[in-house]
Image (cartoon, rainbow, N blue to C red):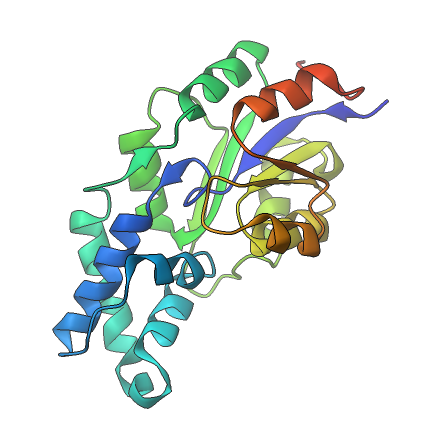
Length: 225
């Protein structure tokens, strides 16, 4: 019987509803170049693959010469205003309390820039203990490269195959699969069930309670050493 050793979370679209703030940062960057804003809903598909990818695709092919400066402006705005509208998704606090009571190690792995990831967790998730919090660092690989997930597994001395990885996009599912972790897709974030299923999510949940239920009802036992 497989023993779960820990649960790793994506951040944006999984633990925190950051869409409005991501859109505000992207549109601030565009406005600083005199370019038109994009609808908030469009940022559901621009988020999740790292800030450089977001900037490049928000600018479009005709403005790629602005990408480096655009990334600088986006990051600066996010550090000042990146959490203005951010909130926990409904049910996340209860889920984290439940996992804490189980003494199940938790971690965060995001494609958000590392300083902004640390700031978000410190300001919005400070009530709970995470064994590791990692965002994207300059020169490092982005998800779905499994390097970050594997580094967390090594640092916590929990084998990759004993981690659940929870996220809202195909990037998260592919990260989990590449790292040999169990992928759980969530439907309250930025993407839909079709994307998660196509990417190969083993379990897809509609609300955080279903993760608690998954742990309680499945045949998979917990290792709470």
